[in-house]
Image (tube, one colour):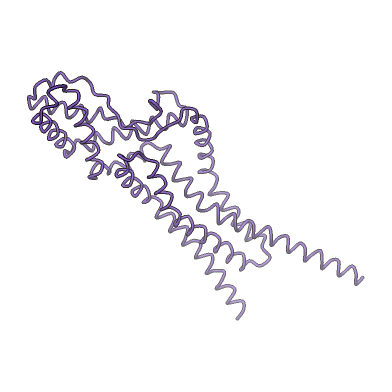
Length: 298
């Protein structure tokens, strides 16, 4: 009988250890999946929701970096299309001043939103394999300059600049992202996987956290470990954002890096609030477990 009792206690102890190991694994998974769900949700929104993308980045039209980029590109294109007249310094100055007035006007914001919408729609159609216009030309996603050039052309005509009315339709573009056509299929697969991750990772993180608390023999310790795991991975996620942004900026063409820097700084803003909320939730779990343990000890 004594042997049977010892065997029973050994089996019970082994079961408790097994539950502890499984619970600890779930706690670590909850900590890892929680910030990953934030990243997946943010990335999915950036790629799939054109309206939200335009609303988030329409403010870039007021930044000096964007205005300088568009002014320089459109001025260069128009003076080139003017032929020999465009080589005249006076004509160049007139074009530059006209383009600058367009960029400084209230109409520029509307044109910028239109351009953002076109470029993002093309990218979404490419990744989602939606029917529509070809989303890339010569291996690059393009920022269309035609709306800006057309607005400048109309002002040149109004100013009675010679031959301005004979300028052809300007279809110049600025390459935003270099695309390898051979990798498009892989990009589309990643896009579909990202959709699944954005929809399911938050639930998986929650289930892992709840599972860790349910399975752990000591509930107070479970709260401490889950809170610590979520907190540590959230801090790692927040700390790793800056190097990732720097890496992304280095992949952008040199001429676009000033604009890319402003873009990525603006892109971080939607992540600040959910990251702080997740950190606060982790702290709440951690301190609840610590206070419960202290109360039990006293």
